[in-house]
Length: 212
Image 1 (cartoon, one colour):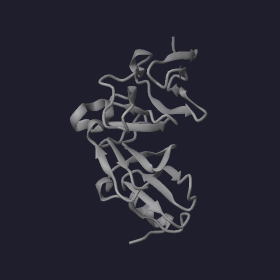
Image 2 (cartoon, rainbow, N blue to C red; image 1 turned 90 degrees about the horizontal axis):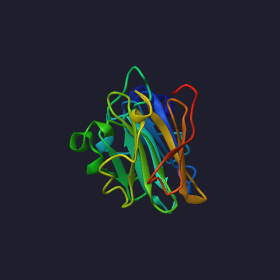
Image 3 (cartoon, rainbow, N blue to C red; image 1 turned 45 degrees about the vertical axis):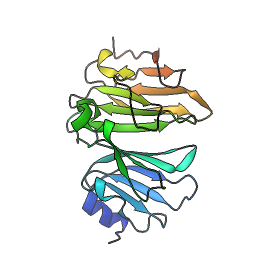
């Protein structure tokens, strides 16, 4: 049954992320605290659950492949809070514009471990490289990278926040839309970290004075 935005909030809790389709602005997706992913086809006037697979999950990130708006990714779990983190079940993918979704098995914490407990943000370059900012149950942040549409990921993260400081989270990661080789993020210590090879390697471009 369709819900208003208020009704969705009562059922699903906080809205953690809101995504607008790049081609059809009236199509929206909302990732919620404990109600999974919801979608609207009328610019937010009414909402319905987008996938039974994500029912009851925390969805904190939604993004689309810039080369194909029918390919979408949704990340589950929320690690942004230092006090209460909501464990997720991995990353889900749609190849039909959000009509149906499937889990990417090698992002499931049950399969690959606690580093994927929370997927805080997903970024996709114009070359199709995917970066996932994740965290474990101890609030340590990681960057994982995939070059095959999310089927496989680096065995080890290309960046580990705990090497810079304890409980070091990565909340967002971004690609330059005009240059797929350039990516950047800021961690919980406000270190600005940069990549010039599509996220394969990273260097701290500006070190925060709060982290020695």
